Length: 214
Image 1 (tube, helix red, strand yellow):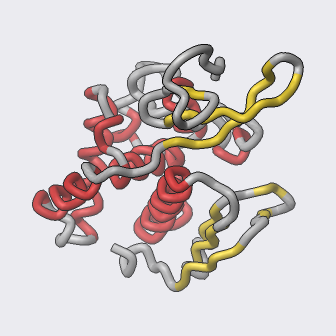
Image 2 (cartoon, one colour; image 1 turned 90 degrees about the vertical axis):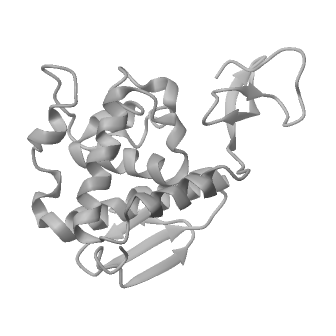
């Protein structure tokens, strides 16, 4: 699959920016380089972002500059009359758009997915690779099956048996907690948020008492 994506190099860096905008990972589609910021992000977010950006590279290698064009087969899985936004770069300041609770309807993983065809596909792909069980609705499962079918056309090795190994790997314990900040008693306070369950705790071992409002 990495060959099909034309991935030529993975560049590890910190304080990554693109066009003066802070970014975490950036795929250079023309050169095949994937820039990954290895700074202070949670493990879960690093894994998700890597697969998200890798999908963009796969999509571009197959479709070229048309990778974000209208996709009728994909669009048929969305709510009737729905139209995507102007692109993911316009949601960079929306810190809550990547959370599952932000999804406007069952057809989308989160609000960020509604920004463009390409971002919707990349978010579903990242979930497929990291935690398939969050793809709960029929629409999301149909989108996942569509991506799996398309990928197998360019990489026949990614068959049903291959996906079983992915599912087995996902059953192993992974750290899905991330540190966030919220205003509490007039000041910013850090809290832990579980991306998959939506649970929030002031400390990782805090199972009693007041919970942060995330």
